[in-house]
Length: 482
Image 1 (tube, helix red, strand yellow):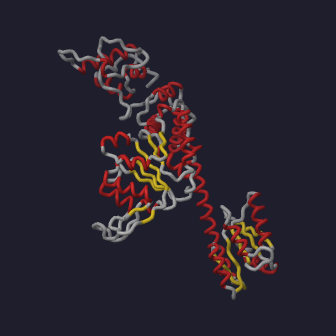
Image 2 (cartoon, rainbow, N blue to C red):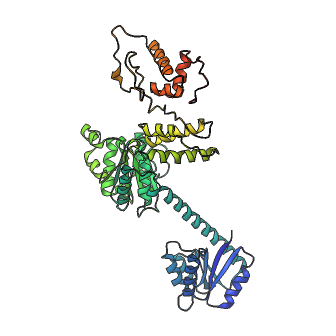
């Protein structure tokens, strides 16, 4: 990889010596006669889209010295690393330069081997810094508010509110059903806050046993428990300078709620087995799918903690309230799954689109991901026509409607009160067999339509057809929905 190197040196002879020594390296060399010219050159190259990767600067120069140049560059957001050149006897300048942020220094007269080794090491640092900036940019674009797909009024309002909350240091409480994207919003709030370059540490309080959760959060001193041979850092300490995201705080046990209250209120905590208070430098974002007010009334959540965690509350809308957002999300998921499988993108045909929009999505975006990943895997054609929605979260009621009750041709009954068990009882399998037969006849043998009449998926209907030996009709194998 070719790098661009700027030599800032007021003595032309030294610039020539440096250029000759570096002739066999894969670098493009630029020159400047003093610090002021160096700054102008750096700015011009950045504007031209060819930024400087490394600066070699002398210390003593007219107009703007090397230390002043270094100080000015360090104030920039994306400054190139600087190697300082100093006279052999002036070690104080080298020390001052390192304190200002120089990554190394060279002494005059130059040793060619030392020069090349220093520059090679410096360019490795440059590559790492650039990669870090690229990764941060990728993360920022991935978790920016604009990256959260959807244009429904409910989502737009949530995004507008979240953008306002990101500018505050007050605790945020994200509320909503499971699968509505609470962690995605938490990351976006973090990335867009002044702590966005700090760590984002997430803890799922429901996924860690109560006995271990305190240590996970606060850490422990050596000897605090059996097997603790050294000090253990907790998530609060790991999140220093960034954001601590506590998901499912409704699952916190009451004793730990008291310690969390102190952490949020006073920004202090103690390690397990510790005796001194530690300062917490974190911003808090909390999330729960539970009704904390109801939990307070039931005595399972502290009221004072509820007030502290919900300074800035935000309710995320469920997918069923986001209208056609489900289709834009669906197309994104399908494209991602197809790419991972090496398939061409599969368009959603009208029947599949209609099924996705009508579905209630009790599992929200998580359920949508599961449904579409399965659909792409099972699809043998060039488009998604019918979508199988038979997930544990969305299985329709199993109660069979009364044989004498009329069935709607547009949508199956979904209420358990539509069938009254006769006093003499029934043979459930006989009723079910008869209903499957009726649905198949009414749908003229179209199994997809018959499945919709019964509130079943095609896979579930196939199982019942085989179970009751009903799939021997002449239409078998001609159903366009199979």
